[in-house]
Amino acid sequence: MSQFFRFSAIACLLLLTACPTQFGGLPLIPTRAFLPSKSIPPADVGAYGLVALRAKPTPANTARLNMLCVAFIKSLPSRYSLPVGMPVTQEMITIWPIDDPKQVRPEEENCGYLLEHYDLYGGQSAIADASIQGKNLSGRGPYLIGWSPSNSRYISDAVVLVVDMSDFETQDSFDEALMFWQRKIVEDPSLWASGFSVTKIRLAMRDFADRYGTSILKAVRLGAD
Image 1 (cartoon, rainbow, N blue to C red):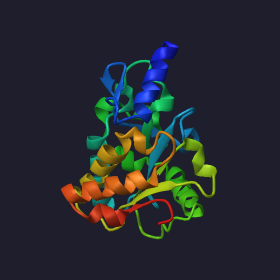
Image 2: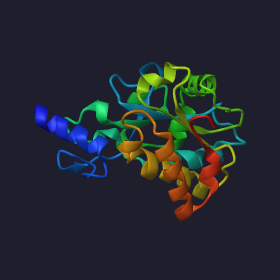
Image 3: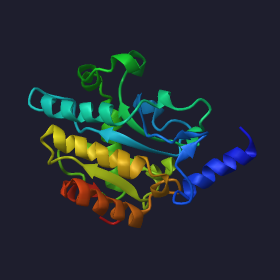
Image 4: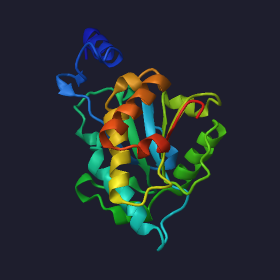
């Protein structure tokens, strides 16, 4: 990839209002990945989010967590669908922690398997780290937790973005949370390419609430929230 093309791609990310969200002529798309906790975050990734559970599914909550899994798969395309050669530094990957990702094939993604093999340390450690950064994550979850840049996870006063789905009970509510994550966060690099923009994310929240409902206003936490 030429230096000019690299500069142009980065410029489009930082000046989103001035040029389309494109990479090599193709749309810059959100991605999902299945990774063990030891591989989170992927090396050199620009920013990432993570589906965090407090515990593995039980008979009492399997149906509810299955709704989250379905929304995750249906809302975010696999990172393997990205154009060849796209730098990982320009990705915002949303991760489902799993103990054996080699067994997850894109054409055979199954929520039963993904829930049974959820990597619990990956979720619990993310909740613990976000709590250290000042977030009140005392609910039952699940959570979507995001850091940008990726190393900000280990900076005590860094901005961490949390979508708290503790009160969600329906497929529509989980679909809405992932829709917000996809349309208003992941697909808009101006919100995260240089670290989370608290002001822009709050504006995105209000815009989303005006169109789809207000539940997201209660669920999203960032900055000093």
